[in-house]
Image 1 (cartoon, rainbow, N blue to C red):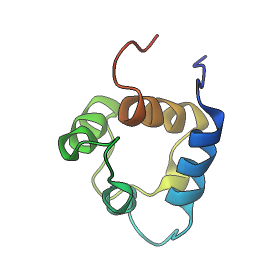
Image 2: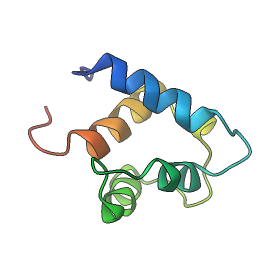
Image 3: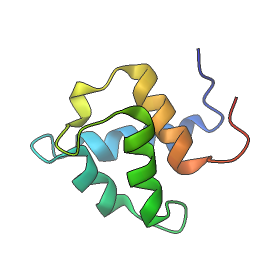
Image 4: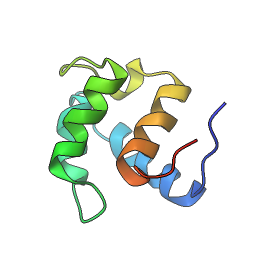
Length: 79
């Protein structure tokens, strides 16, 4: 089971990726791109999680959403 270190940021992340359900997750994440998410990190996370480029947020389990958040916002020192 994964631990969420920053619950407030996780809640914002989940809200943001579900706001436009018809968009793909990759597209939503590209709009969230800020100083905390490096452009290449999205591709790396999708590859490591085995996610399709066309997947949508609602297709992910809670565990995968947590892991994606951790990979994008806290890439160093994950447990």
